[in-house]
Amino acid sequence: MPELIPLISQQEIKEKIREIGQNITRDYKGLDLVVVGVLKGAFVFLADLVRQISIDHEIDLLGASSYEGTSSTGQIVFTKRPDLELKGRDVLLVEDIVDTGRTLAKTVESMQLLNPRSIKICALIDKTERREAQINVDYSCFCIDGGFIVGYGLDYNEKYRNLPAIFNLKL
Ligand SMILES: O=P(O)(O)OC[C@H]1O[C@H](OP(=O)(O)OP(=O)(O)O)[C@H](O)[C@@H]1O
Ligand code: HPA
Ligand SMILES: [Mg+2]
Image 1: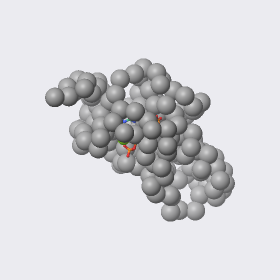
Image 2: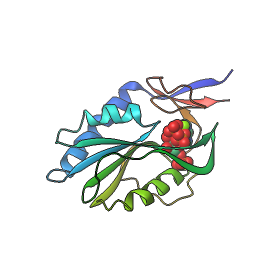
Image 3: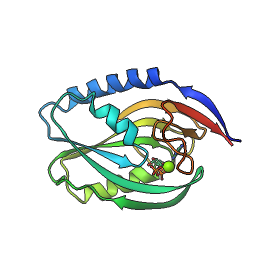
Image 4: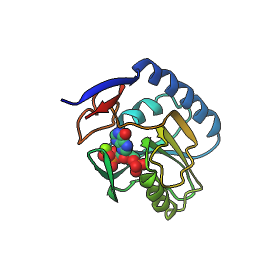
Protein backbone atom coordinates (compact mmCIF):
# COMPACT_ATOMS: atom_id res chain seq x y z
CA MET A 1 0.00 0.00 0.00
CA PRO A 2 1.44 3.45 -0.89
CA GLU A 3 2.10 5.67 2.14
CA LEU A 4 1.12 9.36 2.30
CA ILE A 5 3.38 11.56 4.43
CA PRO A 6 2.07 15.08 5.19
CA LEU A 7 4.26 17.79 3.61
CA ILE A 8 2.28 21.05 3.29
CA SER A 9 -0.92 21.70 5.26
CA GLN A 10 -4.17 23.28 4.07
CA GLN A 11 -3.48 26.30 6.29
CA GLU A 12 0.02 26.83 4.87
CA ILE A 13 -1.35 26.61 1.32
CA LYS A 14 -4.12 29.08 2.11
CA GLU A 15 -1.78 31.66 3.64
CA LYS A 16 0.76 31.42 0.83
CA ILE A 17 -1.89 31.76 -1.88
CA ARG A 18 -3.25 34.88 -0.22
CA GLU A 19 0.26 36.42 -0.27
CA ILE A 20 0.97 35.43 -3.91
CA GLY A 21 -2.47 36.68 -4.98
CA GLN A 22 -1.70 40.08 -3.42
CA ASN A 23 1.65 40.21 -5.26
CA ILE A 24 -0.02 39.40 -8.59
CA THR A 25 -2.72 42.02 -7.92
CA ARG A 26 -0.03 44.63 -7.26
CA ASP A 27 2.18 43.69 -10.24
CA TYR A 28 -0.60 43.53 -12.87
CA LYS A 29 -2.40 46.79 -12.05
CA GLY A 30 -3.12 48.56 -15.36
CA LEU A 31 -2.18 45.48 -17.43
CA ASP A 32 -4.44 43.16 -19.43
CA LEU A 33 -4.12 40.01 -17.34
CA VAL A 34 -5.21 36.59 -18.61
CA VAL A 35 -4.61 33.79 -16.13
CA VAL A 36 -4.12 30.48 -17.97
CA GLY A 37 -4.24 27.31 -15.87
CA VAL A 38 -2.44 24.18 -17.05
CA LEU A 39 -4.76 21.16 -16.72
CA LYS A 40 -5.30 18.88 -15.14
CA GLY A 41 -3.05 19.39 -12.15
CA ALA A 42 -3.54 23.15 -11.74
CA PHE A 43 -7.34 23.12 -11.39
CA VAL A 44 -7.46 23.29 -7.58
CA PHE A 45 -4.66 25.85 -7.23
CA LEU A 46 -6.12 27.99 -10.04
CA ALA A 47 -9.55 28.11 -8.41
CA ASP A 48 -8.09 29.27 -5.08
CA LEU A 49 -5.53 31.65 -6.61
CA VAL A 50 -7.90 33.67 -8.83
CA ARG A 51 -10.11 34.36 -5.81
CA GLN A 52 -7.11 36.12 -4.22
CA ILE A 53 -6.49 38.33 -7.27
CA SER A 54 -8.55 41.47 -6.87
CA ILE A 55 -8.03 43.23 -10.21
CA ASP A 56 -10.14 42.48 -13.29
CA HIS A 57 -8.77 39.58 -15.28
CA GLU A 58 -9.85 36.76 -17.57
CA ILE A 59 -9.31 33.06 -17.05
CA ASP A 60 -8.51 30.36 -19.60
CA LEU A 61 -7.28 26.78 -19.56
CA LEU A 62 -4.87 24.65 -21.52
CA GLY A 63 -4.20 20.95 -21.14
CA ALA A 64 -0.75 19.34 -21.14
CA SER A 65 0.13 15.81 -20.16
CA SER A 66 3.36 13.80 -20.05
CA TYR A 67 3.55 11.68 -16.88
CA GLU A 68 3.18 7.93 -16.45
CA GLY A 69 3.42 7.05 -12.77
CA THR A 70 6.22 9.12 -11.26
CA SER A 71 8.20 9.64 -14.49
CA SER A 72 7.97 12.10 -17.34
CA THR A 73 7.73 10.37 -20.72
CA GLY A 74 9.34 13.48 -22.19
CA GLN A 75 6.48 13.68 -24.70
CA ILE A 76 4.29 16.66 -23.86
CA VAL A 77 0.83 16.16 -25.34
CA PHE A 78 -1.39 19.26 -25.52
CA THR A 79 -4.92 18.05 -24.77
CA LYS A 80 -6.52 21.51 -24.90
CA ARG A 81 -5.53 24.88 -26.33
CA PRO A 82 -6.62 28.21 -24.76
CA ASP A 83 -9.88 29.62 -26.17
CA LEU A 84 -9.29 33.33 -25.59
CA GLU A 85 -7.37 35.67 -27.89
CA LEU A 86 -3.97 36.12 -26.18
CA LYS A 87 -2.29 38.42 -28.69
CA GLY A 88 -0.96 41.58 -27.04
CA ARG A 89 -2.15 40.47 -23.59
CA ASP A 90 -0.37 39.70 -20.32
CA VAL A 91 -0.47 35.95 -19.80
CA LEU A 92 0.15 34.37 -16.42
CA LEU A 93 0.58 30.60 -16.71
CA VAL A 94 -0.51 28.77 -13.57
CA GLU A 95 1.00 25.36 -12.85
CA ASP A 96 0.67 23.02 -9.90
CA ILE A 97 4.30 21.89 -10.16
CA VAL A 98 7.50 22.56 -12.10
CA ASP A 99 9.59 19.37 -11.94
CA THR A 100 11.83 18.61 -14.95
CA GLY A 101 10.54 21.89 -16.41
CA ARG A 102 9.77 20.22 -19.76
CA THR A 103 6.02 20.89 -19.65
CA LEU A 104 6.48 24.60 -19.05
CA ALA A 105 9.33 24.93 -21.54
CA LYS A 106 7.08 23.48 -24.28
CA THR A 107 4.06 25.42 -23.08
CA VAL A 108 5.87 28.78 -23.06
CA GLU A 109 7.28 28.01 -26.51
CA SER A 110 3.80 27.30 -27.86
CA MET A 111 2.22 30.35 -26.12
CA GLN A 112 4.89 32.63 -27.60
CA LEU A 113 3.57 31.78 -31.07
CA LEU A 114 0.31 33.52 -30.05
CA ASN A 115 2.21 36.83 -29.55
CA PRO A 116 1.15 37.85 -26.04
CA ARG A 117 2.67 41.09 -24.65
CA SER A 118 4.15 39.15 -21.72
CA ILE A 119 4.27 35.62 -20.32
CA LYS A 120 5.00 34.92 -16.66
CA ILE A 121 4.79 31.77 -14.58
CA CYS A 122 3.13 31.09 -11.25
CA ALA A 123 3.68 27.65 -9.70
CA LEU A 124 2.41 26.16 -6.48
CA ILE A 125 5.47 23.89 -6.19
CA ASP A 126 8.92 24.52 -7.61
CA LYS A 127 10.75 21.18 -7.34
CA THR A 128 14.40 21.48 -8.27
CA GLU A 129 16.04 18.02 -8.04
CA ARG A 130 15.04 16.77 -11.52
CA ARG A 131 15.15 20.10 -13.40
CA GLU A 132 16.28 19.74 -17.01
CA ALA A 133 14.82 22.76 -18.78
CA GLN A 134 15.81 26.25 -17.67
CA ILE A 135 12.57 27.79 -16.31
CA ASN A 136 12.22 31.07 -14.47
CA VAL A 137 9.31 30.78 -12.02
CA ASP A 138 8.10 34.35 -11.40
CA TYR A 139 5.70 33.49 -8.55
CA SER A 140 6.56 30.34 -6.59
CA CYS A 141 4.56 29.31 -3.53
CA PHE A 142 6.73 26.47 -2.20
CA CYS A 143 10.21 25.32 -3.20
CA ILE A 144 11.15 21.70 -2.48
CA ASP A 145 14.11 19.49 -3.44
CA GLY A 146 12.59 16.18 -4.38
CA GLY A 147 10.18 13.35 -3.69
CA PHE A 148 6.96 12.59 -5.55
CA ILE A 149 4.10 14.63 -4.17
CA VAL A 150 0.33 14.31 -4.45
CA GLY A 151 -2.81 16.12 -3.36
CA TYR A 152 -4.37 19.54 -4.02
CA GLY A 153 -4.66 18.70 -7.73
CA LEU A 154 -1.44 16.67 -8.03
CA ASP A 155 -1.90 13.03 -8.98
CA TYR A 156 -0.19 9.67 -9.12
CA ASN A 157 -1.79 7.77 -12.02
CA GLU A 158 -4.82 10.11 -11.75
CA LYS A 159 -5.42 9.37 -8.04
CA TYR A 160 -5.12 11.66 -4.98
CA ARG A 161 -5.98 14.95 -6.76
CA ASN A 162 -8.85 15.41 -4.29
CA LEU A 163 -6.68 15.47 -1.14
CA PRO A 164 -7.00 18.96 0.43
CA ALA A 165 -3.32 19.19 1.42
CA ILE A 166 0.02 18.06 -0.07
CA PHE A 167 1.68 14.76 0.76
CA ASN A 168 4.87 12.90 -0.11
CA LEU A 169 4.00 9.60 -1.76
CA LYS A 170 6.08 6.60 -0.72
CA LEU A 171 5.54 3.64 -3.06
O1 LIG B 1 8.08 19.86 -15.05
P1 LIG B 1 7.57 18.55 -15.55
O2 LIG B 1 8.53 17.42 -15.28
O3 LIG B 1 7.15 18.61 -16.98
O4 LIG B 1 6.31 18.16 -14.66
C1 LIG B 1 5.27 19.04 -14.35
C2 LIG B 1 4.01 18.70 -15.07
O5 LIG B 1 3.62 17.36 -14.75
C3 LIG B 1 2.29 17.33 -14.29
O6 LIG B 1 1.42 17.12 -15.36
P2 LIG B 1 1.01 15.68 -15.91
O7 LIG B 1 1.75 15.38 -17.16
O8 LIG B 1 1.12 14.68 -14.80
O9 LIG B 1 -0.50 15.89 -16.30
P3 LIG B 1 -1.69 16.25 -15.27
O10 LIG B 1 -1.55 17.73 -14.97
O11 LIG B 1 -2.91 15.95 -16.04
O12 LIG B 1 -1.53 15.41 -14.04
C4 LIG B 1 2.10 18.68 -13.67
O13 LIG B 1 0.74 19.03 -13.60
C5 LIG B 1 2.88 19.59 -14.59
O14 LIG B 1 2.10 20.03 -15.68
O1 HPA C 1 5.93 15.27 -7.83
C1 HPA C 1 4.98 15.22 -8.64
N1 HPA C 1 3.74 14.83 -8.27
C2 HPA C 1 2.68 14.80 -9.10
N2 HPA C 1 2.76 15.09 -10.37
C3 HPA C 1 3.96 15.49 -10.83
N3 HPA C 1 4.31 15.86 -12.07
C4 HPA C 1 5.59 16.17 -12.03
N4 HPA C 1 6.10 15.98 -10.78
C5 HPA C 1 5.09 15.56 -10.01
MG1 LIG D 1 -0.07 14.22 -13.41
